[in-house]
Image (cartoon, rainbow, N blue to C red; front, side, top):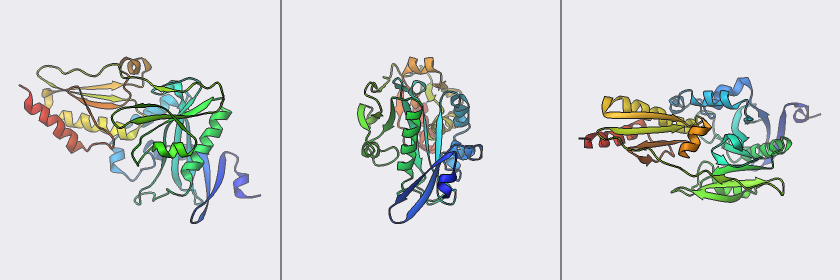
Length: 285
């Protein structure tokens, strides 16, 4: 019997492109939690700037149906991950579906090395779909963007996912793959309001859910930048993991300066955030 068949807690997949690679898909283990909290980028000082938001989010979500799977190469080195959870605990309107918060195969030469173009992503999403079906889900939903980088909508479409909703300046896409005929398509939850400016001060508002280290990083950088301007700036951090708070605003993760949304993908540097705040401070009378 092959080693692949002997494994009791993982699924194995063979993929062939330029070379044949044996990989394993496993559930998150205690051994790999810290790596997961850093989205496999344990080499990155930037990721470590993001604080412990992701760990605290995990502790709250682990009993709410959160599922995390990792892709390991034939040397048992983690190269990819997927996290998904009941859509009722996401920032999407839906029922009896699971939602993919993110799927990520490490693609940098530094750190763990480049694991992309080896079939890990395909294996991860296949494992998630099979798992969601076994859990009784009527479908699997995901978000994507039309630009050619992280969470590409086109990648999901190649895997059989269908666009059901769009929003935002960049045309952020909501996709899904129904498993049953009676599955109801998900939809974005619309933004209800935005932070207001306060006379005589610069207002900086950070909305943070905790699930994404990149967005957590933005919040931590904004917090540090605000501290350098003293009482000239009012800072608010709004925890949108709380469902009532999220529905009040209709915002999951975002940064606003004086009521204007700051683009946070990819995360702006500390220097850039500080500069944006500084410009506003200079105009305060």
